[in-house]
Length: 282
Image 1: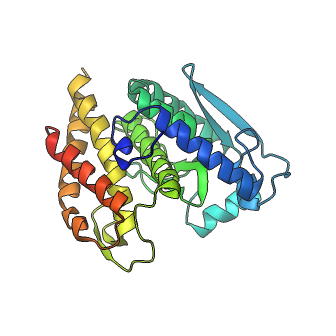
Image 2: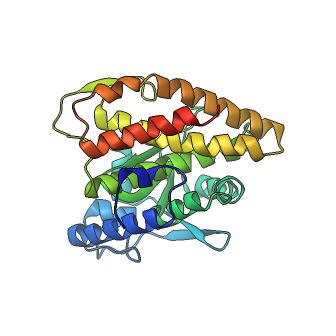
């Protein structure tokens, strides 16, 4: 499959995440001697592919997607501490995975290309604790290819299933774009160009802003469809509000077009993202 940046635009073909997963898995085997069957975040972080695996549990979702959670090993705990990620314990993680299962089946499953991306690219999911019930935390690391970290709102929190769905897709799309960039560079990482990111609310290099634009463009696509199809007023209001918020944020990064850091492929992706966001009714 020819990896043109336009293939990243939602709704992308289900073959895209599968192709990227295969490429990433080959690189993972070369660098860490790990495969999908032997991968765990603890083994990856420890650099010991022969390390006894941390206890883990698979959470099937429908007939296709399986999320795997593993207990917090020493390398994972150290990694979380260094990044100020408060890793949840076993009981909280199990409760959170029930919420994730609902998010996958109710919000993500109706969009096969998103379900494919999650199924292909998320091999480990770790639950982290947020500071407040109204705050969501999610995290992924370009250096850790198939793991994501998400928080789960407490029971009874408003729009909890939708919020978890956004966190999962958010980090899955970061993984996807990182794998794509390993094959098709989009930004000259040596460039000193930076600009304000409305998502981080601070100056960020071009690569960080482009990642944010891509991730939230996919989320905008998902929330726009959700707002048009759901019969639940609360869900419709949530989805519509997210579309409006993302529209405002996208408008704030238009000057990325002037960045000298973008490669030719990066400019083609940026053009496509702006075209799609401009064409979609808000």
